[in-house]
Image (cartoon, rainbow, N blue to C red; front, side, top):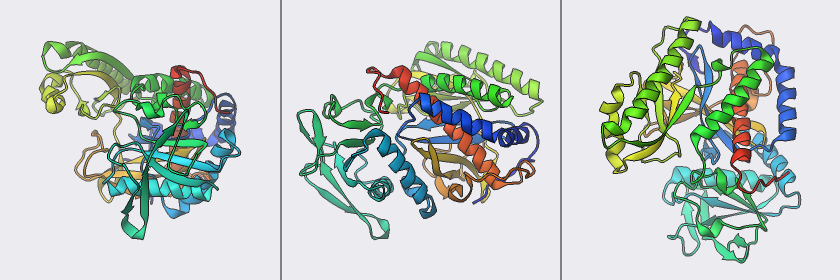
Length: 425
């Protein structure tokens, strides 16, 4: 599937594409050296936005749950990456336990678990799925579309280990982002490998810490290939203890939003960009109770306060992120690429498509659908010499580079926030 880019494929993004392709040997060597110093997250997905003048990651997920969207052609890449990751962490691994989120009746999510199970079984592991939900008191088998089924079993804790009945894993794979906090049953598992680590969950993680790490990575990468790092990096700020229940409670947020809009306007003027800048406001700790807001004028924030208060909560830590338009379309609907990685490898991806959303809005919302990307055929095989903007493999290679930069930033972030400074390599 090749995106239909409605903007003319000219300007900074094409220069960036050409620079990336010309620098490919240096880029791959740079990544190789980085991974000698830093441990990649076990698996990662990155939402990328292509504005035509800018290509940047806008969200990095350390508990990706759309593995079922990847096509069968992508499966061998995922299996090879899983084998590489497991060999580094626990070469003698035999048993793997997947601990899922508590979406027990969401067949889309359960299909994601079935795909993860398939990947690790093909990588040579015995795989069971153990739920920490209080609703799962005995094994529950659920039928999925296409004739598959999946069995969830209650997790059992014995001393410093967890497992399910008659199954003792050496490795625990979390597919639960711990938004509700870290349950005691997962703490102090010193005898087993827990992937990703507990501090990768939203109970501890902050989007602003990731943004800061990505800013550092993007500066180093920009210097490597000789481009302004702003072309791949959304500017950001953060505002703590924003009280949306009163007009006074958002004054600090209004001031910081105006300042960030001013910085973006300056960049737009530098590059001759006519698009009106905007800022996206997100909960810094990933709290789903706060609506994600798109703001073009800081004064709009007072009018948007009611959108945040719908769930009763009033005070939030807020990330202010430079808004990045998306120029991409699938069947005339607004779309954005999502890159999937395991260990340090790009294994696939898809377009998130939303026919009801605009180019400056969040697409990760009810009503979105998914179209697989042709990463398996093309991501590692860019085509040097092709005119910029004319080659889907080259564009996909760029998405993979941006995805890996965000993954590297997540690695920096995890090292900086690790309470135990553990290393798995």
